[in-house]
Amino acid sequence: MIDFYDQLAPFYHIIYGDWESAIALQATQLSQIIRSHWSEAQTLLDVSCGIGTQALGLAAQAYQVTASDLSVKEIDRAQQEARARHLDIRFSVCDMRTAYDRHQAQFDVVLSCDNSIPHLLSDAEILTALGQMYRCTRPGGGCLLTIRDYDQEPRGTGIVKPYGIREAAGKRYFVFQVWDFVGEVYDLSMYFVEDDQQSDRATTTVMRSRYYAVSPNHLMQLMAQAGYRSVTRLDDQFFQPVLIGTR
Image (cartoon, rainbow, N blue to C red; front, side):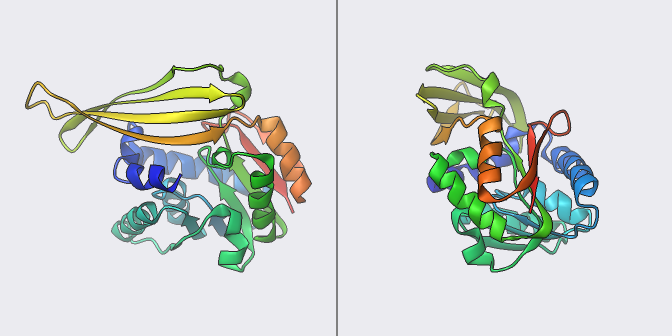
């Protein structure tokens, strides 16, 4: 997983058609959810921040954001992006399974977005992470997770998930994933096919990881098992299902 995200760090923004617009839109959508359920929330902990897609936008909306990720290269990139935007975000390298051990603090809302939780390949690993997130959540505060709706995804091998054509730094990329399932776990290969449009050749970069196709309903049960109450699924408020719970 660390190698996957270290390799992905310089390409991550290319996944989006317009990363800057995605930062702003996601922050607006997440803030609406946060304000609806924890109206006084000010302090946020993002335990899987990547290059900062959610953390940057939320900090720009005046939240006090602390953010961590297990990839050193993604944290380096996130810090660069925050400096470029004059945003004060406390970044650090940390596995979400040791979030409280690392941060030793409680926050109004703890979040993990963009299908990060399913990198943990068993219920036991997810419960470890959720237990650490629970300890990082102040009483009355909340947990916010977003994941793919795996109940709607096909199973099998050679499943192609295209993102489409992207333009970045004068180059054109074709971006797609390939999934290969074994039971409820699948191997993911992420491809960036780069065409500099100055020759008849293209360069392909591929990075690989593994996911647990945990259903949203089952993840909600695990959130409740970790101690969160009033666990709820929200649809049509973000590009993925949103699961929330309150400590």
